[in-house]
Image 1 (spheres, helix red, strand yellow):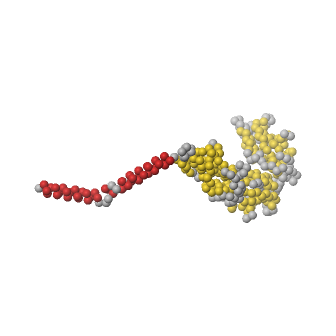
Image 2 (cartoon, rainbow, N blue to C red):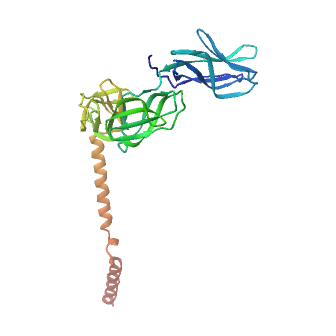
Image 3 (cartoon, rainbow, N blue to C red):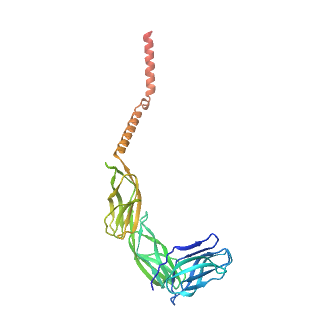
Amino acid sequence: MVLGVALVTGGAAAHDDGNGLTVHNQTEPLDEHDEVHTLHVDKATADSDFYVDLHTDNGTINTTRTFAADTVKENFDVTLDPTLKSDTEVTVATHAANGTELAAETMSVDVVEAPTVSFSNQAHELDEHDEVHSLNVATAAANQEYYVDLHTANGTINTTRTFDAGTARTDLMVTLDPTLKSTTEVTAAVHATNGTELAAETATITTADVEFSNQTHELDEHGEIHSINVAEASAGTSYYVDVHTPNGTINTTRTFDAGATQRDLTLEIEPTVSSDTEVTAAVHSPDGTEIAAESATVAVTSESEETSESEETSESEETSESDENTDDSVPGFGLLGTVVVLVGFVLVARYQQ
C-alpha cells in the first residue's frame, strides 16, 4: 500500500442564494479489513430542505437524511457504503429535496496502513534566541487510541494528547520542550495509550541561521558600491549564501561545509547598488531551498556628503567655543566692568574741577 499525505487546503463553495459547502482533503487509516468506513464534512447548509451526497466516479457511496432549510450542519461524519480501499477522489454535494444539486466540492481521500507515522527531514531557521520551537509530523494514524511522541537521543522533547482510534492526523505541528538549538536526529513515534510503540520514523532536523544588519557604504567615483557584508551564516547542512533585492539576485557564494560558520562575509555584488536598497541575505541548501533569511537596508553615501557633514560639524563646534568665550561666561565680569566705568567717571569729574 502506498502511503499518501493529504493536502490540508480545503475546498469551499459559497453561493449568494444561501447554499454552501465546506470540505477538506483527508487522510484515513485502513482498518483490519483494509477499508475506510467514514469521511468528514466540515459544513453544509442550504436555504431549502437539503441532503448531502457523497460519490466517486464509480457511483454514490452514501446519502444523508434530509435537513430542514437554513440548517447549518457542521463537523459531521458520513458512513460509507461501499467503503474505500485505496486513494480516491470523492465529490461531496448538497441537493435540494427534489434532487437538484445546489453545491459541490471534490476532495482527495488518501488511505494509509495503520499504525503508521510519516516524518521526514526538514530544515528550520533558528529564532532570535537561537532555538527551534516546533516540528511537523506529516501523518500519524492507528486503529486504537494513540499519541505521538517526539524524542532525541537525549530524551523526549514532547508528547501529544491522545487521538481517537481509527483516525489520522495530518500536518501535526508539535511544540518542543526542550527546544532544538542545533542540527539533531529526531524520532517521531506512534504509541498506544499503554505506552507501546506502534510505529516510528527518524529524520534529520537541520538548523540554519543568518545575521545581516543595516549598513552604510560610500559610493565610488562611478556612483556605485561593489560589496556588502553578511555578519554571520551557518547551517547544519552544506549551504551557500545568496544576497538579493526585489529585482533579483546580486550575488551567490560558493558552497560551504555543513556545520561551518562563516563570519564577516564580504560579497562582491553584480549588479552594483547606487542608492539606498532593501537587501535580503539568505542561506540555501544545495538544492536551492531557502532555510534562513534576513533583510536589511544597505544605505549609500558620497564623499561630498561626508565632507559637508564634517564642515557643518566643525562650524558647529567653532560656534559653540565662541559662545563659551563671551564676557558673560566669566563669573562676575559684568559687575567688575561696571565698577571700572564708574571710577573713570569720578576721576574725570575731579579733573575737570
